[in-house]
Figure (cartoon, rainbow, N blue to C red):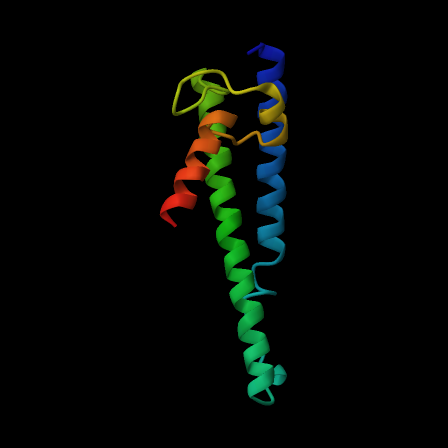
Length: 120
């Protein structure tokens, strides 16, 4: 992969990391606290707990994305970015454009998803 492309992906990954961290910091207390004023009855409580559950799942997804971004940035530094973890072939540029944290080429990802579908 060209150095220019690597620099572009690194900048894009750093920007995405900053966005996720900023969003996480902004919503840290808003989504995870239950206000006693809002909990008048069981329906209000159930609604608040559901909202909190959704917020926690979104936080977990953000944490997972941050981990993948860190891995991708480390691969850029190590000169291994854009190489499939499974078959060690180059990952198509279009795939990386769509998902810069991709660790598998399209063929290997499809095989992984098929295997997950069979055993799920």
